[in-house]
Image 1 (cartoon, rainbow, N blue to C red):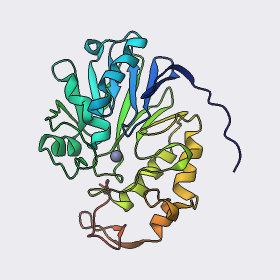
Image 2 (image 1 turned 135 degrees about the vertical axis):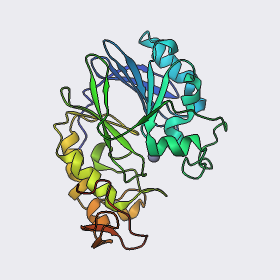
Image 3 (image 1 turned 180 degrees about the vertical axis):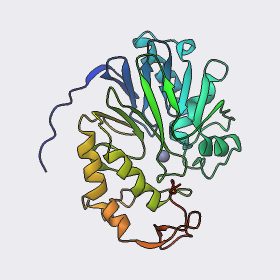
Image 4 (image 1 turned 90 degrees about the vertical axis):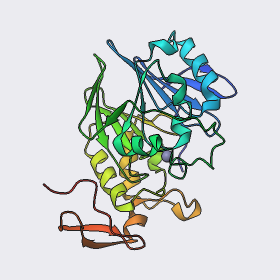
Length: 281
Ligand SMILES: [Zn+2]
């Protein structure tokens, strides 16, 4: 394997717990070194948002990072949660009363119902505090921050409720656990679907993305290469069962009819037939 070239992204602050990295002008990654997912700050000309916030126990370190770039908690207008897993949303309740909390409607439903299985409660030792979702997002919504326009894409697969945020003008792809640098994918959890995962990656392939800002790991300035690897390369996935290539997935898929729209589609062989995320009209 070739040596990875130096990161083009500037590190602004480093601590034992996290690293603050500038991803683009007015876009920052807070990358946690523990099991907390990455948090992103997007400082728009009219609105400032966080995309995911990490674990509750990381909250003081998140604030330290925000403080370093002169952002106070009250400056955050909205917290967008990429999906329902607690390593991404655990600290969200700290923003109650300060900021709107937003998530895809399927994630919102699970979070509001305090569905501990879906949120991976047992995996993370988080305080069992309710998280209220103020805005229930859908495919096609647009989050307008002034100089950033983030399109909400419903990209199920990892779970049923995953969203990807894409700024078409700037090429920023906030893909959370759907895609990570090097083509790594975040596994398929209880409500997820391998067939949906493949469809979601196919959608990401068609985008003019320039920077991949994912839920875990480093930033990437080769997102199209990452999608290509993730969707077509045969990785050594069997050594790490959570990381599946889509070719590996396809080998476990058979063609069946969609129960919703009755057109031919794909579904896993080892679970009940699920309709794809988007049926033809
Ligand atoms: Zn996840």
